[in-house]
Length: 279
Image (cartoon, rainbow, N blue to C red):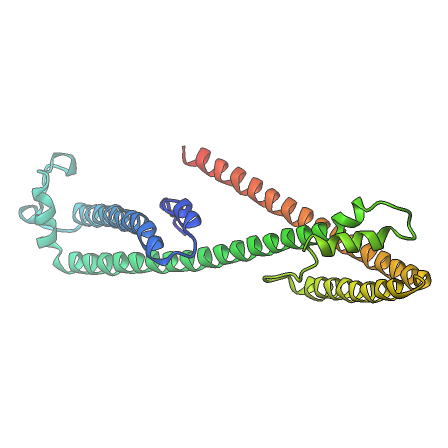
């Protein structure tokens, strides 16, 4: 496969305007022009090589052909032939061979150009799949960061809540509700975290409702200490569960980011080696 020198002409532009079709068309225009120029140059090189091969075969065949001296195009030797007159002379002397060589060369040139176009389409398809994978991976990493930020926002009041363990989580939930951060997660989520995040919000919302009911009972008479302690214990269990899930999401984010960095580093080394070989 012929390496495409125009591969990265518009790559940075496409990354910056991803999702904007009108501007992406403008970004692809320079790469399209580069491809056309490369194809023209490639065709000229292949065509020139084939012409040289045809001329060489004709010259060899004519030099060793059993012909009369009057029909020879360079009777004094190939080195003393008159360039390029002898080429036309050799074609006239070997019309069948010349026609076959020219026809074969034309067919071979067409096949090579067609093969190059097919390879280009295959490369474009692979590039599109690679870009789609990169976009999906970026979106998944972005959603993982949002999950971590959401859990951190829910956990912050509990980390900063005053008091002992038997009342700390009640204070934290009260602060979380008053600050307006006890809200559901909005947006897309990785499938494995959808249920976890939704359940965390539902549990805290239900516990906050129960806590309000217990506090209302306390306002009308003796405080329900046992009920509040039970709610505090349940809130602590939910908080511990959220911390565990946040740590899992953080570990997955770190591992996937490390893999991407390693792949990017390996790709840069491969490009550098390729540049050195071409140099």
